[in-house]
Length: 333
Ligand code: 8YV
Image 1 (cartoon, rainbow, N blue to C red):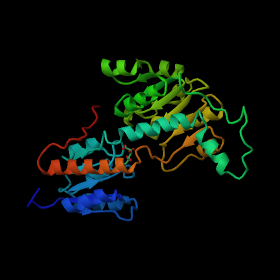
Image 2: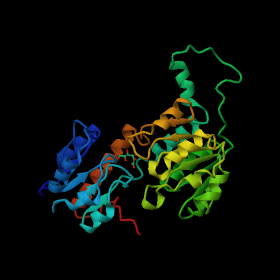
Image 3: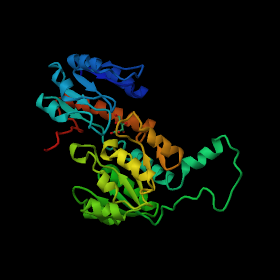
Image 4: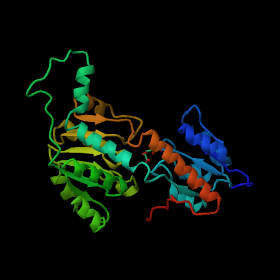
């Protein structure tokens, strides 16, 4: 890019310092140092003048916004793996390339999934709250704060992509048997390594698992994939964990089934209308039925710096006339 006009890159949120420093060196970078989410009018102004937009999960990059983009906007380099907030098809129609940041957050997100898979059945948050709560701890008791064992149990993974597979590896090490439902079977070598059982029928898998982990992307096809009907198939002793996207689960139905004791509990890092949280979920959290986290699946300094570096690599490749390594294609309908 030496000697060429530096692309005007508008970054919608505050990114880790090393990433911002590098972006300032390479691009005509417009940073968001206060980290105040951009309003839609500010996003419109940004797409009208930018060569590159770097959005995050808090930005709605829909067809209406893309329609207002200026002729300079040629690349939307998402800071994030999931592109469910970007209308990739509308961007493609307008000749705008979209990239994301896969792989670098896989292990961190899988770690958080495992943490939630342990936290709910083993009552981690409840136990921690006892010691930080008002009441003085009365000490150990043989039958107090008993949770449920996870090793030796059956884990059903919905979506056996990079993150689902990383979750399976961890869960196998924790002594769970691995089951999965996916659009396609994974490679035989991967199934063998994980001793994983493929379930073509999601319904049948849901009815027989002790723990369900949601690890598929949010797309029109996976909206409420875990519907009221499907959630009702789960065993009353079963738990569900979601570190993918909130709208894959019919949240109201999940809440009702947990309230009625038809599902044992849930570990959630994502919500259907985040950042708005359903108050009934908060009530269930106070009862220890659910453990709720604020979308921090990939929240490690290392992971977020790696995500930023991937954004930089995608921008540089694009402006060097190459196909960016993490180009996202519109979903085939
Ligand atoms: C990101 C995520 O932090 O990558 C994703 O899809 O959900 C998170 O890891 C978030 O998307 C940032 O935009």
